[in-house]
Length: 348
Image (cartoon, rainbow, N blue to C red):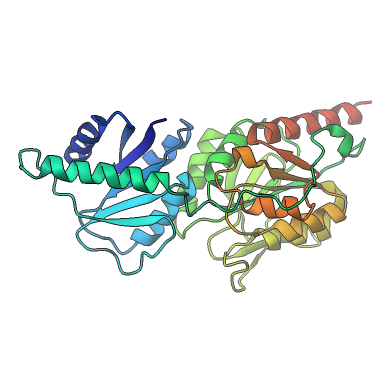
């Protein structure tokens, strides 16, 4: 099986040279993309899994750490950063530094450097991705994948979603397949580096029949709308069913945290809520998804096979917090079927 490599650089010349040079190796499949956020987001529509991303930086920018975190959130694979000097504040899991590539094909050292780069790429891609967590589930629990686990007459009023690394791909897949007439709002906590969320929301809004926007203080969520927790605020709903932005320290090392959202939804909506925990590292939202289940909510965890990082859903499954364990495609289908069922019941 070939190693899928994505090359990111602002230099068209360097990108073209590298793509051609690396492409001669039969074990590598090379994609070159200009290093622009909108174009990176467009790659998600192609559903390509990359085994490694090679970033060429001629000059390390001050926001390189956040940019790398953004790329990791999108693709969740190892990153090989090539630059003249390693950035001092870029100690992130899954990020490797490689000396600056001076791409001069006429140089006598060019082929040797390319071969060294190829070996480095293969070595890194063979190692277990440090972004991925232990896939083993320490429980015999198995969720019921059928409607028999759901109340006969569901009357859901809200959908709450938590996602982290790999979440953008999954959210795009789910939201793009839901109808615009969805009769409930969807509230999302997506772990994302600062300043990239508005760009991501704008892109999602273009791809989805639903209206996607940032949640604001005091706002009342509306049917057919998708609301995201803003940067640096936890998001909750109050007893008046309006948004509350909470400026408290990170929880589970993240801010916003899905735990805040799920807890408030459990307290306010109870059995009238659907909670969904998607791909991501750590355990954010898992305990609170169990709380939602205890209050009668329908709870869903993304399945291991479709997760880019099987951390948060795995923890939820181990806690017996999920009524259903589904793929993104099945999640979309289940939501649509549930609300078609609601419509049929209300029309009787």
